[in-house]
Length: 126
Image 1: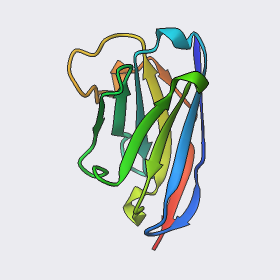
Image 2: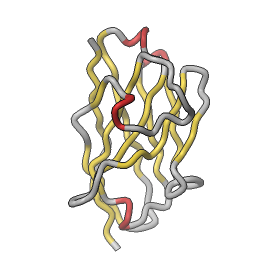
Image 3: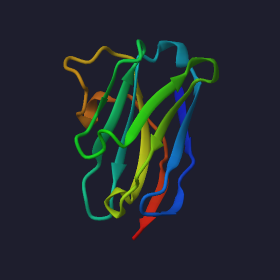
């Protein structure tokens, strides 16, 4: 089994930055893809970014150029650096991970992911 724990959320003003962390524990050696999703109140969970074991990354159009996903293998941790935050970025952010190779890239479908964290709240004020 794999456990994912997010941290780093908070309240910031528009234009500021935050870095989210997702610490993995358990059978992490088998993970090959990690992702970030977000869910705003009253909306469906949406894909934000993904990174593979070979550090190939992809981003949703809404965050491209502002967010960066990265991994630290030694710490079993995935990060989401969020710059130039906007009020529209306000949401609960969730980390995800998978053991199976995706059938398409990037793997954005919710049911692809085998593991999810509990989420961390990001609130951006205008």
